[in-house]
Image 1 (cartoon, rainbow, N blue to C red):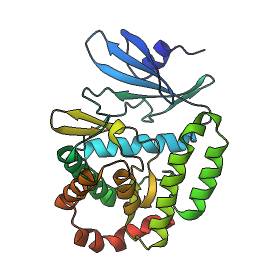
Image 2: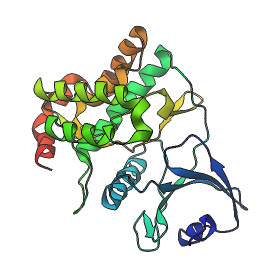
Image 3: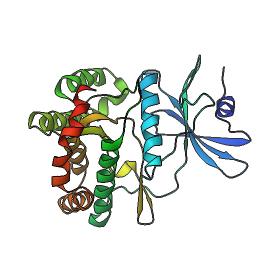
Length: 258
Protein backbone atom coordinates (compact mmCIF):
# COMPACT_ATOMS: atom_id res chain seq x y z
CA UNK A 1 0.00 0.00 0.00
CA UNK A 2 1.31 3.45 -0.95
CA UNK A 3 1.68 5.77 2.02
CA UNK A 4 1.27 9.53 1.49
CA UNK A 5 5.06 9.86 1.81
CA UNK A 6 5.57 7.34 -1.01
CA UNK A 7 3.01 9.14 -3.12
CA UNK A 8 4.87 12.42 -2.65
CA UNK A 9 8.11 10.80 -3.77
CA UNK A 10 6.43 9.94 -7.07
CA UNK A 11 5.85 13.67 -7.54
CA UNK A 12 9.48 14.45 -6.72
CA UNK A 13 8.76 15.76 -3.22
CA UNK A 14 10.71 14.38 -0.25
CA UNK A 15 11.68 15.31 3.31
CA UNK A 16 8.19 16.56 4.02
CA UNK A 17 5.75 16.56 6.90
CA UNK A 18 2.06 15.90 6.31
CA UNK A 19 -0.99 17.11 8.19
CA UNK A 20 -4.43 15.62 7.50
CA UNK A 21 -7.10 18.18 6.62
CA UNK A 22 -10.66 17.81 7.85
CA UNK A 23 -13.96 18.84 6.26
CA UNK A 24 -12.81 18.23 2.69
CA UNK A 25 -14.50 16.16 0.00
CA UNK A 26 -11.29 14.30 -0.84
CA UNK A 27 -8.76 12.86 1.60
CA UNK A 28 -6.38 15.82 1.73
CA UNK A 29 -3.05 16.49 3.42
CA UNK A 30 -1.20 19.76 3.89
CA UNK A 31 2.44 19.16 2.94
CA UNK A 32 5.47 21.16 4.08
CA UNK A 33 8.98 20.31 2.90
CA UNK A 34 12.21 20.88 4.79
CA UNK A 35 12.89 23.75 2.36
CA UNK A 36 9.60 25.40 3.33
CA UNK A 37 7.67 24.56 0.16
CA UNK A 38 3.98 23.87 0.73
CA UNK A 39 1.57 21.68 -1.19
CA UNK A 40 -1.89 20.14 -1.03
CA UNK A 41 -1.94 16.36 -1.56
CA UNK A 42 -5.34 15.04 -2.62
CA UNK A 43 -6.50 11.42 -2.65
CA UNK A 44 -9.60 11.48 -4.81
CA UNK A 45 -12.74 9.62 -3.79
CA UNK A 46 -13.35 6.31 -5.51
CA UNK A 47 -16.76 7.53 -6.69
CA UNK A 48 -15.37 10.82 -8.03
CA UNK A 49 -15.02 11.64 -11.71
CA UNK A 50 -13.05 9.41 -14.05
CA UNK A 51 -9.27 9.60 -14.09
CA UNK A 52 -9.41 11.27 -17.50
CA UNK A 53 -11.75 13.95 -16.14
CA UNK A 54 -9.46 14.53 -13.14
CA UNK A 55 -6.47 14.78 -15.47
CA UNK A 56 -8.35 17.25 -17.65
CA UNK A 57 -9.20 19.45 -14.66
CA UNK A 58 -5.51 19.68 -13.83
CA UNK A 59 -4.53 20.39 -17.45
CA UNK A 60 -6.99 23.30 -17.32
CA UNK A 61 -5.52 24.52 -14.01
CA UNK A 62 -2.00 24.43 -15.45
CA UNK A 63 -3.21 26.42 -18.45
CA UNK A 64 -4.83 29.06 -16.24
CA UNK A 65 -1.64 29.48 -14.23
CA UNK A 66 0.31 29.92 -17.47
CA UNK A 67 -2.27 32.56 -18.44
CA UNK A 68 -1.41 34.43 -15.20
CA UNK A 69 -4.67 33.72 -13.37
CA UNK A 70 -3.90 33.27 -9.70
CA UNK A 71 -4.59 29.81 -8.32
CA UNK A 72 -3.03 26.50 -7.45
CA UNK A 73 -0.48 24.97 -9.80
CA UNK A 74 -0.69 21.20 -10.35
CA UNK A 75 2.58 19.29 -9.99
CA UNK A 76 3.35 16.91 -12.83
CA UNK A 77 4.67 13.38 -12.52
CA UNK A 78 7.81 12.39 -14.48
CA UNK A 79 5.45 11.03 -17.15
CA UNK A 80 3.96 14.49 -17.62
CA UNK A 81 0.60 13.37 -16.23
CA UNK A 82 -0.92 15.02 -13.18
CA UNK A 83 -2.85 12.09 -11.63
CA UNK A 84 -1.09 9.17 -9.97
CA UNK A 85 -3.21 6.01 -10.02
CA UNK A 86 -2.36 2.76 -8.26
CA UNK A 87 -4.10 -0.02 -6.36
CA UNK A 88 -4.71 2.26 -3.36
CA UNK A 89 -6.36 5.13 -5.20
CA UNK A 90 -5.81 8.25 -7.29
CA UNK A 91 -3.70 11.17 -6.15
CA UNK A 92 -2.80 14.67 -7.30
CA UNK A 93 -0.55 17.36 -5.88
CA UNK A 94 -1.19 21.12 -5.99
CA UNK A 95 0.81 24.06 -4.72
CA UNK A 96 -0.49 25.56 -1.49
CA UNK A 97 -2.10 28.99 -1.50
CA UNK A 98 -1.62 31.38 1.39
CA UNK A 99 -4.40 33.86 2.05
CA UNK A 100 -7.74 34.45 3.70
CA UNK A 101 -11.11 32.84 3.01
CA UNK A 102 -14.03 35.12 3.88
CA UNK A 103 -17.53 33.93 4.72
CA UNK A 104 -19.02 36.72 2.62
CA UNK A 105 -17.56 39.35 0.30
CA UNK A 106 -18.47 43.03 0.03
CA UNK A 107 -19.04 45.02 -3.15
CA UNK A 108 -15.38 45.94 -3.58
CA UNK A 109 -14.27 42.32 -3.47
CA UNK A 110 -17.21 41.24 -5.61
CA UNK A 111 -15.95 43.59 -8.32
CA UNK A 112 -12.54 41.89 -8.17
CA UNK A 113 -14.24 38.48 -8.39
CA UNK A 114 -16.25 39.56 -11.43
CA UNK A 115 -13.10 40.73 -13.18
CA UNK A 116 -11.44 37.40 -12.35
CA UNK A 117 -14.31 35.46 -13.91
CA UNK A 118 -14.10 37.57 -17.06
CA UNK A 119 -10.38 36.82 -17.33
CA UNK A 120 -11.15 33.13 -16.87
CA UNK A 121 -13.67 33.32 -19.72
CA UNK A 122 -11.09 35.08 -21.89
CA UNK A 123 -8.68 32.25 -21.17
CA UNK A 124 -11.41 29.76 -22.05
CA UNK A 125 -11.80 31.37 -25.49
CA UNK A 126 -8.10 30.90 -26.22
CA UNK A 127 -7.76 27.37 -24.79
CA UNK A 128 -7.28 24.51 -27.25
CA UNK A 129 -8.11 21.27 -25.39
CA UNK A 130 -5.71 18.41 -26.12
CA UNK A 131 -6.88 15.07 -27.48
CA UNK A 132 -8.77 13.18 -24.77
CA UNK A 133 -9.64 16.28 -22.74
CA UNK A 134 -12.91 15.46 -20.97
CA UNK A 135 -15.03 17.49 -18.58
CA UNK A 136 -18.76 17.50 -17.76
CA UNK A 137 -21.16 19.34 -20.07
CA UNK A 138 -23.70 21.70 -18.56
CA UNK A 139 -26.64 21.28 -20.93
CA UNK A 140 -30.20 20.22 -20.01
CA UNK A 141 -29.83 16.54 -20.89
CA UNK A 142 -26.49 15.98 -19.17
CA UNK A 143 -27.57 18.08 -16.19
CA UNK A 144 -30.55 15.84 -15.51
CA UNK A 145 -28.34 12.72 -15.68
CA UNK A 146 -25.81 14.33 -13.35
CA UNK A 147 -28.51 15.38 -10.90
CA UNK A 148 -29.85 11.82 -10.72
CA UNK A 149 -26.33 10.58 -9.97
CA UNK A 150 -25.92 13.18 -7.23
CA UNK A 151 -29.22 12.16 -5.65
CA UNK A 152 -27.75 8.68 -5.15
CA UNK A 153 -24.74 9.96 -3.19
CA UNK A 154 -25.66 9.91 0.49
CA UNK A 155 -22.81 12.21 1.51
CA UNK A 156 -24.22 14.97 -0.74
CA UNK A 157 -27.79 14.77 0.52
CA UNK A 158 -27.64 17.99 2.56
CA UNK A 159 -26.31 19.91 -0.45
CA UNK A 160 -28.86 18.64 -2.96
CA UNK A 161 -31.07 21.78 -2.89
CA UNK A 162 -28.05 23.88 -3.89
CA UNK A 163 -27.22 21.52 -6.76
CA UNK A 164 -30.83 21.53 -7.93
CA UNK A 165 -30.98 25.34 -7.96
CA UNK A 166 -27.67 25.60 -9.80
CA UNK A 167 -28.71 23.09 -12.43
CA UNK A 168 -32.04 24.83 -12.92
CA UNK A 169 -30.10 28.02 -13.66
CA UNK A 170 -27.89 26.14 -16.10
CA UNK A 171 -30.90 24.75 -17.96
CA UNK A 172 -32.47 28.21 -18.11
CA UNK A 173 -29.28 29.72 -19.50
CA UNK A 174 -29.20 27.07 -22.21
CA UNK A 175 -32.87 27.34 -23.14
CA UNK A 176 -32.77 31.14 -23.26
CA UNK A 177 -30.07 30.97 -25.92
CA UNK A 178 -26.97 31.94 -23.97
CA UNK A 179 -24.80 31.24 -27.00
CA UNK A 180 -21.31 31.95 -25.62
CA UNK A 181 -19.93 28.66 -24.34
CA UNK A 182 -16.61 27.65 -22.90
CA UNK A 183 -14.90 26.03 -19.97
CA UNK A 184 -16.43 27.47 -16.81
CA UNK A 185 -15.69 27.21 -13.09
CA UNK A 186 -19.36 26.41 -12.34
CA UNK A 187 -19.13 27.00 -8.57
CA UNK A 188 -17.54 30.36 -7.78
CA UNK A 189 -18.42 31.51 -4.26
CA UNK A 190 -16.64 33.04 -1.28
CA UNK A 191 -15.46 29.65 0.00
CA UNK A 192 -13.52 29.12 -3.23
CA UNK A 193 -11.81 32.51 -3.10
CA UNK A 194 -8.42 33.05 -1.47
CA UNK A 195 -7.77 36.72 -0.74
CA UNK A 196 -4.17 37.88 -0.68
CA UNK A 197 -4.52 41.49 0.36
CA UNK A 198 -6.69 42.99 -2.36
CA UNK A 199 -5.68 40.27 -4.81
CA UNK A 200 -7.74 37.16 -5.54
CA UNK A 201 -6.88 33.54 -6.26
CA UNK A 202 -9.59 30.99 -7.05
CA UNK A 203 -9.58 27.32 -6.05
CA UNK A 204 -11.80 24.23 -6.28
CA UNK A 205 -12.29 23.53 -9.97
CA UNK A 206 -13.88 20.13 -9.22
CA UNK A 207 -17.04 21.10 -11.13
CA UNK A 208 -15.43 22.91 -14.06
CA UNK A 209 -16.86 21.90 -17.41
CA UNK A 210 -18.25 23.02 -20.74
CA UNK A 211 -21.28 25.25 -20.45
CA UNK A 212 -22.87 28.66 -21.05
CA UNK A 213 -20.82 31.53 -19.69
CA UNK A 214 -24.09 32.93 -18.39
CA UNK A 215 -24.46 29.93 -16.10
CA UNK A 216 -21.05 30.65 -14.57
CA UNK A 217 -22.08 34.26 -13.95
CA UNK A 218 -25.54 33.44 -12.60
CA UNK A 219 -24.17 30.79 -10.24
CA UNK A 220 -21.73 33.29 -8.74
CA UNK A 221 -24.44 35.95 -8.48
CA UNK A 222 -26.68 33.52 -6.59
CA UNK A 223 -24.26 33.61 -3.64
CA UNK A 224 -24.17 37.43 -3.43
CA UNK A 225 -26.33 40.20 -1.99
CA UNK A 226 -27.82 42.82 -4.32
CA UNK A 227 -25.09 45.45 -3.98
CA UNK A 228 -22.36 42.86 -4.42
CA UNK A 229 -24.15 41.41 -7.46
CA UNK A 230 -24.09 44.76 -9.23
CA UNK A 231 -20.41 45.18 -8.37
CA UNK A 232 -19.62 41.67 -9.65
CA UNK A 233 -21.20 42.51 -13.02
CA UNK A 234 -19.34 45.83 -13.13
CA UNK A 235 -16.08 43.98 -12.55
CA UNK A 236 -16.89 41.46 -15.26
CA UNK A 237 -17.78 44.15 -17.79
CA UNK A 238 -14.60 46.09 -16.99
CA UNK A 239 -12.65 43.21 -18.53
CA UNK A 240 -15.10 41.62 -20.94
CA UNK A 241 -17.95 43.92 -22.02
CA UNK A 242 -21.05 42.18 -23.32
CA UNK A 243 -20.34 43.34 -26.87
CA UNK A 244 -17.00 41.50 -26.72
CA UNK A 245 -18.77 38.36 -25.56
CA UNK A 246 -21.16 38.64 -28.51
CA UNK A 247 -18.32 38.94 -31.00
CA UNK A 248 -16.81 35.74 -29.64
CA UNK A 249 -20.04 33.77 -29.72
CA UNK A 250 -19.30 32.07 -33.03
CA UNK A 251 -15.88 30.93 -31.89
CA UNK A 252 -17.12 29.64 -28.56
CA UNK A 253 -20.06 27.81 -30.08
CA UNK A 254 -17.62 25.06 -31.12
CA UNK A 255 -17.70 23.91 -27.47
CA UNK A 256 -21.23 22.67 -28.03
CA UNK A 257 -19.95 19.76 -30.06
CA UNK A 258 -16.99 19.08 -27.76
